[in-house]
Amino acid sequence: MSSATLRPKTSTSTAALALNFIEDRPDPTSSSASLVSQLAHRQELIAYWDVQPGSRVLEIGCGQGDTTVALADAVGEEGSVVALDPGRPDYGSPSTLAQAQAHILSTPLGPRITFHFIDPLIYLSTYTGPPFDYVVLSHP
Image 1 (spheres, rainbow, N blue to C red):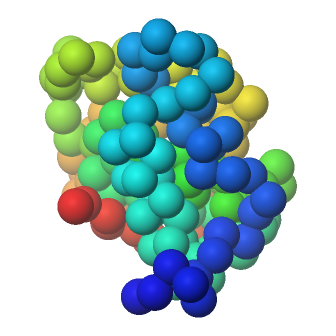
Image 2 (tube, helix red, strand yellow; image 1 turned 180 degrees about the vertical axis):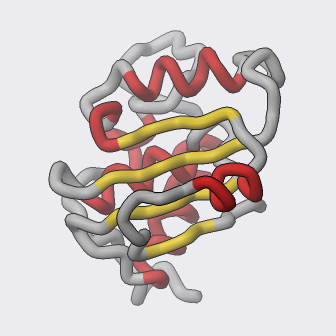
């Protein structure tokens, strides 16, 4: 996968997208190089998967939401992301899953995302909603 050929479909820059993710920032208008690099990789994956605006996406193993943020940007205002994680809300450091996810929900991308702390098999065995266009499991 070459970054020269895989560009995000949205006009949101990686640096701007990173500001939706929880991080200690000495300068509130910038993010760490490692977070920007990580999100750029997620954007390349989403471009490769050809996630379209308006899509419904199920993300399994969302963690603190780095892929979730990129997916929410890709699906646009008409799309949605259902993000599942089997971890406890108090898991994680320096921010817990609950803190990171609450922060993301407070950003402009928040209305596109629904987070659930649940085992994916339990969720899927009881799910009766509309079909998903994409199912994503993205771990480094």
